[in-house]
Length: 164
Figure 1 (cartoon, one colour):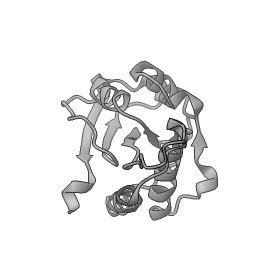
Figure 2 (figure 1 turned 90 degrees about the vertical axis):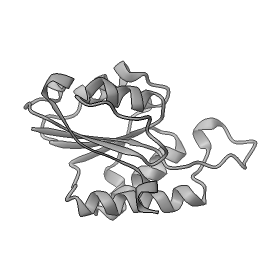
Figure 3 (figure 1 turned 45 degrees about the horizontal axis):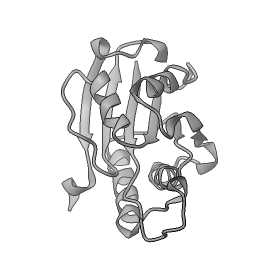
Figure 4 (figure 1 turned 60 degrees about the vertical axis):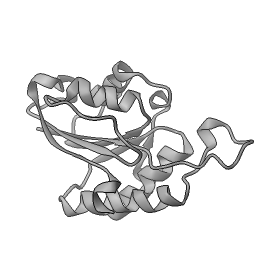
C-alpha cells in the first residue's frame, strides 16, 4: 500500500513587487494555514515517510510548516525542481520515482497542475485545491510506479476553511 498526499502551497504574498514568482513568501494567512493543516494531518495519524516540495519559497515554507507539526525534520524535505511549472504527467513521474521504501509521500506544489493531478488519480472528482488544500489517496500497490486511478481510494479532501 502507498499513500499520497497532494498539497497545494499555502497563501502567498504579492506585496513584494521586485520578487520573482519563485521567491514569493507566504502571507500572514498562509503562515497560519500551513501549521493548521499540519496539525490536522497529525490528528489523522499522518506520519509521512517523505515530503517532496517545489523549490518555490511559498511551497518549501508550506512543506516546512506542515512537516513541523508532524515532527518531520525540515532537513529531510526533498526539493524537486521538476515540480515548479510541472503538468500532471510531470507530477506522476515525480511520484513514480519515489524510493520504494517510502510508503507515504506528501507532494507540495502548485495549482492548476496539482488539482489536475489529483483528478487524474482520484476515483472520485476533486474540486480545485484552494491554498493549503490537501488530497489524501491510498493506492493498493507495492510500487510507486503502479499508482493509478484504478487502484486508488480517496481518503479525504481538506482545506483550511473547514476549520474557521
